[in-house]
Amino acid sequence: MIVAVVIGGVAVHQAQASRDSGGSSPSSSPTGLAGVWLGSDGSLYKFDESGAGSYTQTGRDVCGGDTTTVELSGSNGTYTTTGPLYDTSGGSCGAVIGEVTTTITLGAGGDSARLTTEMTSTSDQYEQVQCYSCGTVTLTRKQ
Image (cartoon, rainbow, N blue to C red; front, side):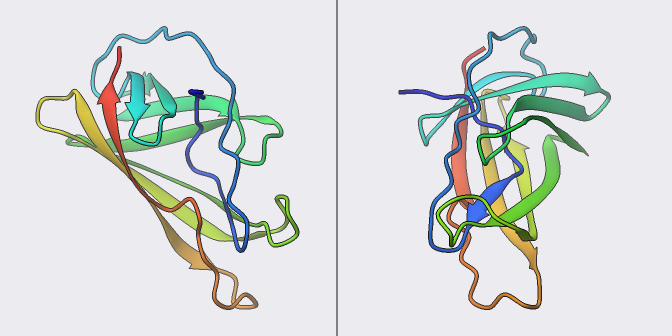
């Protein structure tokens, strides 16, 4: 099963997040980051151009709740966004306990990219936090 994924939010600490954000039909022309991408994790990623060096992605948040829009900005083929880091030790999304940064770097031909998510901060009250959805995904342009 292939699902569309909204980046920027992530669940952590003892349980992996569901990253299903529902599907949407592509409407962007494939320039820069705009378009539909297939991730090496089997997920679809759709980005819409929203301005010079700025792209948005809309879908359900990482906890499967509300619809959210993530904005990525940057230049020279590198785009970043930050998002919440959730505690899932109770089996579902709990308190925000930190922040993650997602960086997408386009390949030389523009038909591939590397999406890297890393934990950039955590609350001082949490020790040994493990980010389950951090890491790197290779993207291949579909449209």
